[in-house]
Amino acid sequence: MKTFLPFILFLLPFLSAAQTTKITGTAPGAEGKKIEVIICSDLITGLEKTLAQATIDSTASFTLSLNTDKILSAFLAIDFHRGELFLEPGRSYTVSIAPLNYNEMQEVNPFVESQSLEIIIQGNKPDELNALIQAFNKEYNVFVLENFNYLYREKDKARLDTFTVRMARKFPDVKQNYFPEYVRYKLGSLEQVANVMGKSPMVKKYFSDSPILYDNVEYMDFFNEFFSKYITTTSRPLKFLNYSGMLNGPKSYPALMKALESDTLLHKPQLRELVLLRNLMEMYDDPLYKQESIQNTLAAIVKDSKFAENKVIAENLIKYLTRLRHGSAAPGFTLQDRNRKIVSLSDFKGKPVLLGFWTTYCQSCLSEMELLKPLYDKYHDRIVFVSISADKEFMKMLFFLNLKKGFTWTFLHLGNEIGLLRDYDVRSFPLFVLIDSQGRIVQYPADLPDSGLESSLEKLLNP
Image (tube, rainbow, N blue to C red; front, side):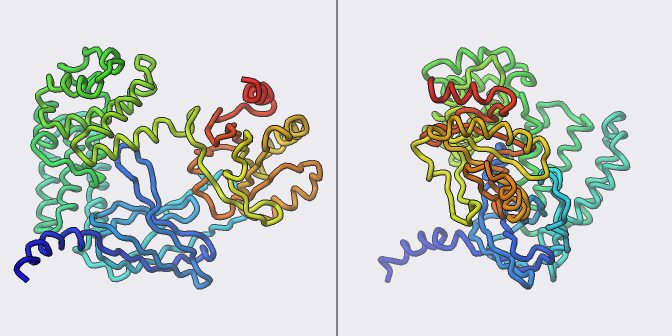
């Protein structure tokens, strides 16, 4: 027994790190719809991922389960409607989502239509994280509404100090760390607004001598705001460096990290690297810098960084910055066609695809569709035409197609796969995307049929 005990003691933290968090609840009006738990993979890129999903049953009930080893700032999402929820490892939540008419007859762009879900946690105790954050935010919002001009224009530090003391008295002795740090950095952002101290003291107070809280939304909000354009504009020792030259060099990552050491406030390598990542994201669309060089630098950070969290952010940045750009992988999908047959994007591999998003209530969609037909007649043997209807009801698409007998190309219905509109960032209809025979983006958004699409199709077929 003595031989194995040290090993077991070593192994236990790893075996018990992730705990099951469960959410059960009701969402009246959303029967048959999908509900998801969505988080940001990191709080710099904001790239989202779904941790759990379920179908809301005929009694409007649902159960969601996920494993986590840390507190998550999450969203419960139904269609494009969302509500925020903080999830702690190992806790069970019983929630009720206020009734909402998810199937209203009016058809509008879901980005415009989205509403906040009102989530009520049943049996929520005052010392539970969601209750604490809700109570603090209520006080904070009232304070900012009444005092913003005093802070921003008059730099009235005394008002902020009084509020800080009042919050410390109102929320004493909170056992877990997330909430006190949430409050600290939310108040810190007000200190920045009030300009109560210079940049250097702010960095020392909130960043240089403090751990990096990658998963705390208020820490990262403050970080992103504070270090925006820091190395190219804000930091005096750094803003005149030749970043273009370093990025184009064979060892850009170590060269940049070494150069950033000249700002003594970034003496901690982990913080310095995170600031670099934040600024590389902003530099990507600046014509002063080559995008390929920034991608190569990020790839080097993924490979060589000593900090696991920064590696994840660098990898996400590559995805975020190249997403839907020429040469990136087109997001996949599996949807029903007009005959209820299941069709996937991968089914068309080996042929280019012209993908379109449309609705029957979008007049410009219908006009472009009429112009799309002669292009289909001309190119259908060499290019696959796919039109995805975002109508709420399958029968609306089918009724339209029954009237348009000449529209014989592939039509698919979005159904409950609302995430596909997020994947393709469909913010208006119609939207066309040109995809090559290997499933890579050629043109996003592609030209419309009435403004150059045929030329783009010719270039794709005859490069």
